[in-house]
Image (cartoon, rainbow, N blue to C red):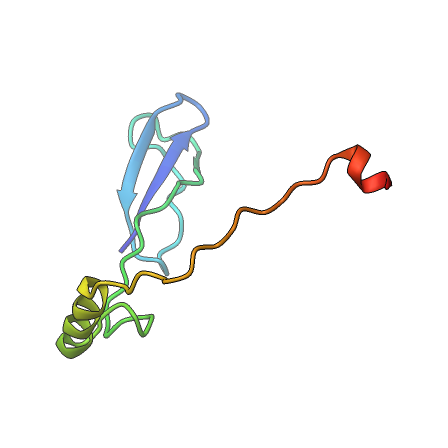
Length: 95
């Protein structure tokens, strides 16, 4: 059940009320019995419960161990060295 915030139009008193969604909004202030309005709140945190939402969220133990082995394996060093790229100047490009 959500918590709604209200504010009295007459005295300015702000209060929260724990109500069911289907319950009608409160109409009177508990202090002065004046008219109240429901405030727009920021809402609460969203909590998802279930088996997961992405295939990568809950990987199997076999997948995790294989990924660790793959990341721990040394990469072979390349045997050929690449030459630095040659830059041309404005004078050379006009030739």
